[in-house]
Image (cartoon, rainbow over all chains, first blue to last red; front, side, top):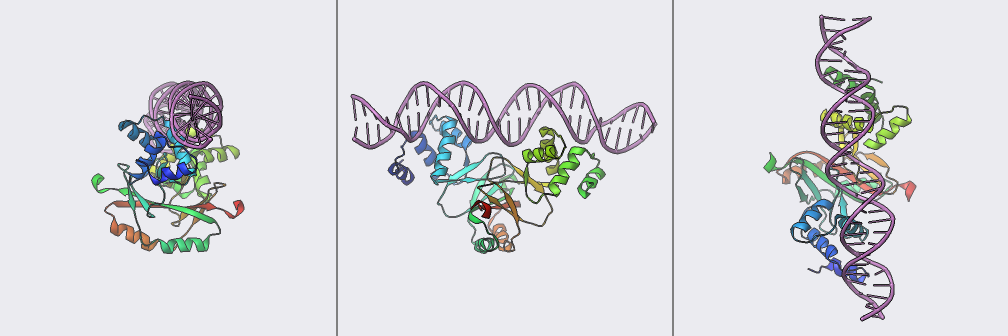
Length: 137
Length: 137
DNA sequence: ATATTAATGCAAATTAGTTGCATTATAACA
DNA sequence: TGTTATAATGCAACTAATTTGCATTAATAT
């Protein structure tokens, strides 16, 4: 499938390759952040044999292009997700590791307060909740 | 220096060692989260030569004892800080990597909303802001 | 078709974190 | 004050995550 992101990249002079399109496709059709190794495994399972190095390089490239975002969570591995979706946060089960997206209505005040008290040029934030999911309780 | 945490551990039957007391002391007197390697470097600099393995093991132990907390931030390395301080969040400069603590008044509504919409047993959350600090602008 | 160079694969290196095992040292107690 | 039990340590080797160099392949413009 050829997505808007892919067309945009092509317009900028970058190439449309199997690795690029399948990684993009996977991230676009997954509703929670993925790690490099999980992307690697999923692609292998569906018959796209891509080297793990390529995945790391592609993720770095997509980050630079601001097509994806880095999500710091509780473990050592970094997670990635498509940017530009409805603004949301994450809820992670510390028992099974599953991650869910959450949309919160009431964060406006928090961000305002933050911008008032800080002299930093704040570009983004990450908010994650940790607990046990119903299945693991 | 012998701290309350150390005395509490002694009361529980754990020993007071140089590694334990210096790691605890460092975390207690630092106002931002530290990584295992940064702890290692700082201790070396002040003349406490502790093996990095010991630091990892001690951090794991202090986590189990709920004396410290794990802070997921933007980079690959995990950060740790003393628990039980005034509830706060973090502001990280993506240019120089410095981290600052932030106390926000207006997060109550957010947490209430979160507990209302979720069926998870939520134990903690982490909120971090990322941007450029005045020095790096 | 061909040329340019972006993208890839492989191997090797680096960095973060973990594990096994023998040794050391803290603290309890005879 | 010694003796003892075992918590804590150090070292080496290991695993997992990520990065780098370099030669090769392949996407696109001409």
